[in-house]
Image (cartoon, rainbow, N blue to C red):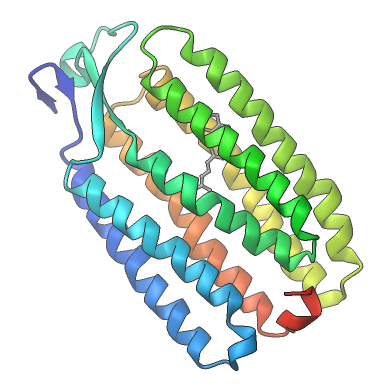
Length: 246
Ligand code: RET
């Protein structure tokens, strides 16, 4: 809908609240399942539940139509009455991602048994990617695409590390680690590549209205967090956390 020249989401709000509930519920579920395991095997439950609780708060914020700022659209398009001259940019997404994407990478890379300096390095590149995406989203002019391009390069580097370094490492850690990393890694590569596409159509190019943005990102976040978490924790039922060096 359009309020004072700003295209904001109306129908997206209920979807955001629904995802908020899903994230909160699965967070509690994964935490409870962790408490049914011996203390030494709870690490991945804590990480995954933490991811879901942070996401739940972000989705509550967006459902309440908070955590956004209006940004002038570079080229208001013909259906400007739908999209508005300003666009609602949810900066709270990036605060969520700044916290949760490193934890998702920790889930994956700790499972692969990578040494911590390598994990820290990949997390640093991930932070660069998220911050550049945020700055690009807040920039009004076409310079936003320069930030976007560098962020995309950072994403490709992260995916290269998953596909090359981490996969090879996981393969020598036994069949359960190999299988779990394979399933969660493939999901990650596939879903993470869709985020820059969503960004380009929403924050970047203003091709999709905020209602569609709500659907697009909600589907991606649902796959990247609750579904990813379920597959990871399912895989870990046969993995000894201590064998991973953590
Ligand atoms: C941005 C825009 C700039 C270019 C790129 C991006 C990538 C974002 C990614 C986000 C992943 C988020 C996840 C959230 C968890 O639910 C910042 C959109 C490359 C990969 C997994």
